[in-house]
Amino acid sequence: MSTTLTVKGQVTIPKQIRDALGLVPGTPIDFAVNRDGEVVLHKAADPRGKAGKTPLDRFDAARGKADVPWRTQDLMALLRG
Image (tube, rainbow, N blue to C red; front, side, top):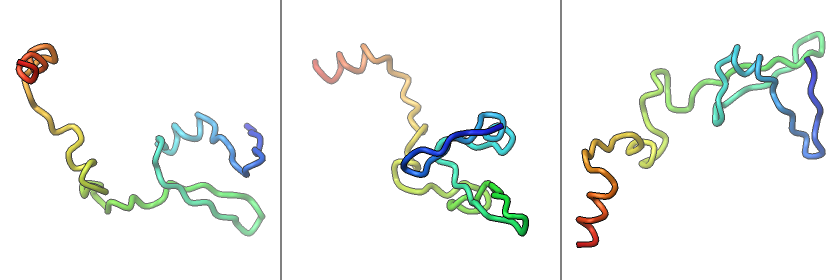
């Protein structure tokens, strides 16, 4: 499987590789060159720690926490009324 290097030095990691390593947008990755001159790609350690539970910032901490039972139309009527 091959890919093409862009003018900016970027490449697209093929989907099979992304799936095999569990890479999603925002996943940190490490590159290394082994003794044979081959490039090796590793999923890097998560900067949030081992459990991945500590949020990176306050927005990550709040994301997905809303449990408001309001429908959008009801909430808009309340706010506008």
